[in-house]
Image 1 (cartoon, rainbow, N blue to C red):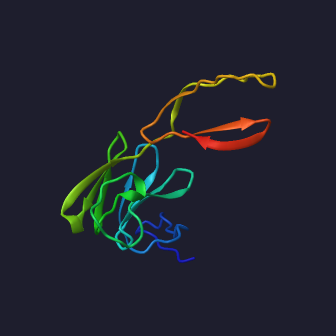
Image 2 (cartoon, helix red, strand yellow; image 1 turned 90 degrees about the horizontal axis):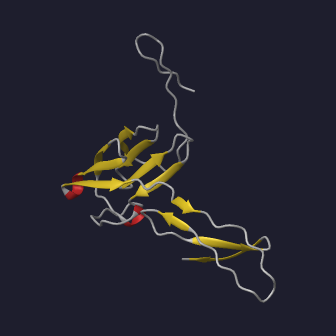
Image 3 (spheres, one colour; image 1 turned 30 degrees about the vertical axis):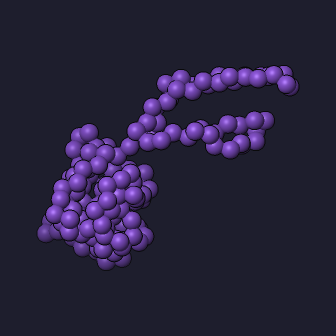
Length: 153
């Protein structure tokens, strides 16, 4: 490992193990320790969570464009600057499109009513209620006798 230090010799630098990075151009950190960065060549926005997970949250591949959309449906063209505010809104200088873009990082859904366990006699029906809120489309999974069934919306 190459050791690079500052003048006081108290800062050790190392390469972070992120795959698929071509041309990182800007970094920002939110108030809970997540790192966001831009990859100019791949025209995307990536998040590194405080747990070390790396996720592409905007843009995809090397096809620059100006499409708005959710996640990788949004496209950028030469993103060069990034900032994150206290509400986790992300501002991007989309240089190739001559625009400032804004996005919000969606958190996990908030479940307000949890379904209760129900035992049903064969041939009977049961009703379960789940209430959840999320800025993203929600899907649910039902489990019968420890077997996972298809997703429902």
